[in-house]
Image (cartoon, rainbow, N blue to C red; front, side):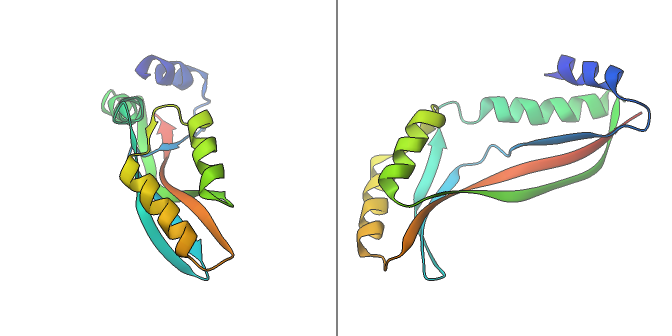
Length: 137
């Protein structure tokens, strides 16, 4: 990952900017939303404990420490995944987030909340995203 950032440094013009956007590497809340109410079903874990996400963030720190870039700004923002039902969300997760862990208690709670929540409702997964702006030195 550091090697890729070194290559990007070579390709960027002196006045160029590198924007990095990636998941923050934190567990993702699974929520049921209805009528401006948010109910927490649980957290979606990760089989690798977000190891690649953490390595990518560490690589950014490394190229800054090595003097290739300087952070101009670091921030985070929520990215929300929406589905009409828990079944749809669960299917999407199984097809797209292969390393995600949806434990039995979270599944049970999501089904219970979905069945007892006023309609219309939706299932939302909240993912924190990391964004940083780096300038080459």
